[in-house]
Image (cartoon, rainbow, N blue to C red):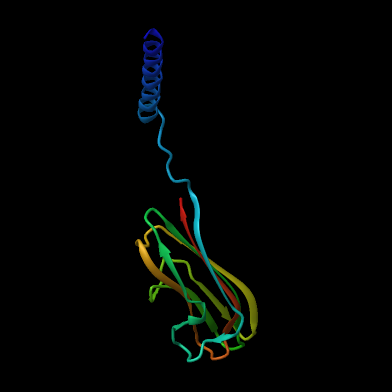
Length: 167
């Protein structure tokens, strides 16, 4: 009988120790939070030329349309690269903007790019990027728009990257 009561006491000590460790972990060990960093990445590439024709019209580049999803706590990063050509002419212009869910992002709170040429044709690489923490949770889409006053102004060899991240 003394052998079994000694075993019972030992089992009770082990159980109390395990319970004490469990209480310690709940009270004193912090729960890990989600680490910051990139969560999801979407990418598209369009090699062909897109002209600003018809002129003086906002043209969405649907070949670069990316569907993406934002989860709770995530921000969104957009990065667009292209080669832009502005044809020779008196004050020839091309403008590039992001288009989020069909809305043209323009104004002081959103980056955009405008290239203007006076009498010379220019061809330059362009990079446009933006980060937003105001995009709602759920499914969205993004593309790029071009606008120009000459039918020969264009972009070509374009890439678009979308990433969701936790800051």
